[in-house]
Length: 189
Length: 189
Image (cartoon, rainbow over all chains, first blue to last red; front, side, top):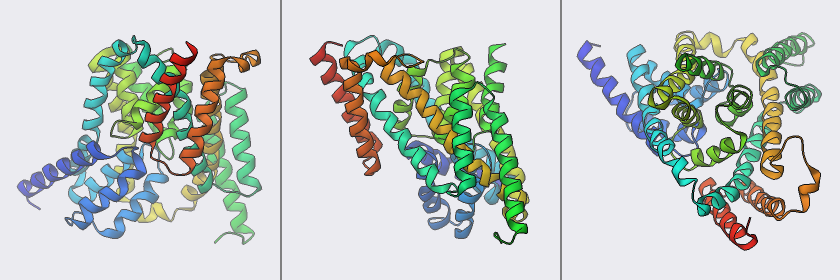
C-alpha cells in the first residue's frame, strides 16, 4: 500500500466509525452488527469471519468493547494509523454530545419538573443495570466454582472496602488454576 | 495536578474493565465516587443520560466526569485515559491474535474474571439501590413507608419487568421520567 492509499483508507475508517459512534445507542454489543455491515458487507475492509473474532477478543481483553473493536478493525484495515483513525472516529461523537450536556445539565436540574423526572428515571434505570447483570450472569460459569466466585466477589465488594483490582487479580488467578486442574483431570479439552 | 489525576484514574478504570459498559460501575464507584468527583445519585442520573445519547457508556462517563471536574481539558484527559489501555492492548493482540485466542492462560483467567464481574456488578447495583431507595447508606428501614420509597419501588418493579421483556431502554427511561413527574406533583415530594 502506498502512503496516499493508506491515508485515504484512514480517512474512510475515520468516517465509518464516526457514523457508528454517532448512531449506536447502548454502546458495545449494539455496535457489532453495524461494524459488520459497514466494514465487511458494504466494503471489504476486513473479512467477515474476522468480525466474530472481534467479539471474542473484545471480551477477553480489558476496556470498552467499542474501543476494542474500532482499534482492531482499524489495525486490520490500515495498520496503526488506521486503528488511531477508527478509534478517534468512534469516540468523537459521544465526546462532543456529552460536553454539551455537561454544560446544560446543572442549569436544567434547577427546575422542579426535571428533578421529578430524574427521581423516576433513577428508579427505572436501575432496571437496565439489573438486565446487564443478568446478561453477564448468563455468560459466566454456573457450576460450584462460578457460584463461589460470584458470591465471593459480591461480598468482597459490598461488605468491605478492599480493592476491586485486587479481587480481579485473585479471580483471574483462581480461574487459571481451576481450568488447569480440570484440564489435567480430563474434564476440559 | 487534577488533569493528570483524571487521566491516571480513568486509565486504571479502562485497564481493569472486563466486558465493557456497566462492568465499569464497580470501579467507577471505587475510584470516582469515593474521590468526591461525582455523587452516587448523580451517577445513577448519568446512566440514564448515557442510555439516551449515542456512544459507549465508557466514553460518556469519562467525558462527563472530566468536564464536571476540570472543564473541556478535563474531559479530554479522562477520555484519553479510558481509551489508551485498550488501544495499546488491542494493537498487541491484533499482532499475535491466533496465539492469543487459543492461549490456555488467557482462557483460564477469563473464566474466573467473567464470574467475578457478575458479583462485582451485583454489588455496584446494590449500592445504587440503597441510594435510590433510601437516600442513605446504611439502609434506614423506617423510610420504607414514605411515598418516595413506594413510588421508586413501583417504578423500579415495572421497569425490571419491561427490561427483561426486552422493551427498549429509551422507552423505559421516558416512561420512568413521566411516572416520576406524576408522582412528584401528586404527592408533593
